Length: 136
Image (tube, rainbow, N blue to C red):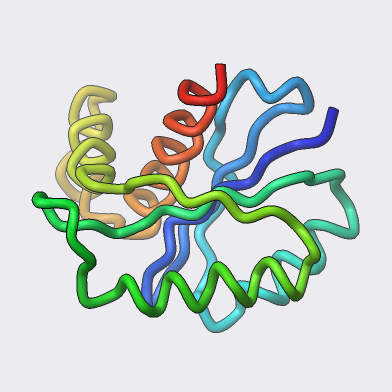
C-alpha cells in the first residue's frame, strides 16, 4: 500500500506529514518554504510511493471561506494536475491551536513552542490523522 501525504499550506511555510506504508499512523515529516514546495514534492514522490495528497482546507467558524481559501483551491488544482494524483480536502479549523496545545502537553518549553515551523508540521500531522480517522 502506498503512503498518503498531508499539507498544511501557508503563504510562507507549508507543514508536511506522511503516513506509514499501511496508512495507519500519521507522522510529521518536515516544513518547507512554500516557494520550494513543488520541488520538494517532486523529489519526495520520486523516492516514495505516494497515492494521495491531503490538503488542509481553511474555513471560518461558520464554515465559510477564509482569505486564503482561493489560494488553497488553486493549489489543489495545481497539485492534482502536476502530480496526476487525487487531492482530498480536509477541514483544518483549529489545527494550529491543537498543534500548540500538543506542544504544551508534550512539555516543550516556551521558546520551543514559538517555532512556527514545528507548529506547521504538527498541524499537517493533525490534518492527516483526521483524514485517516474519517477513512476508517
